[in-house]
Image 1: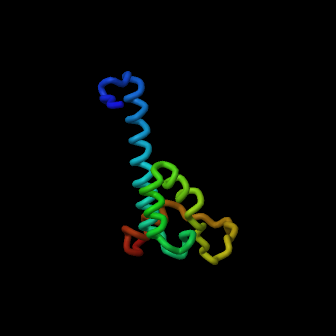
Image 2: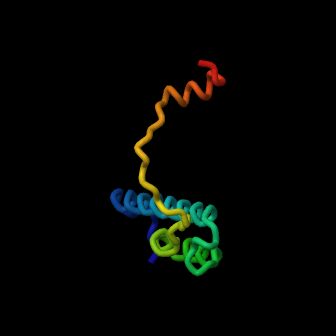
Image 3: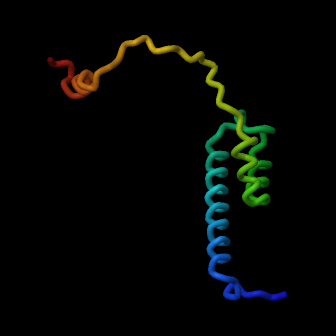
Length: 102
């Protein structure tokens, strides 16, 4: 069966275009995140496996990487509560531009 794209109704073409945009967007997001993420924060520790999954499994591959393939960043530092002191914007501007003159 040979069907031309022009034989499809307009709504089907719009759906196909939307799916294509979503797929390309997810693939780019996943690949950029994978490139920037250290190997220690990637499940299985092998980035090339995830590149293949993202590119070969279409939308599902990118969604799998973004949901399962990334490990949370462990900074190792405990979260500290605020001490209640705040910095005023004026103090920051004065320290930057007044060279200590007041």
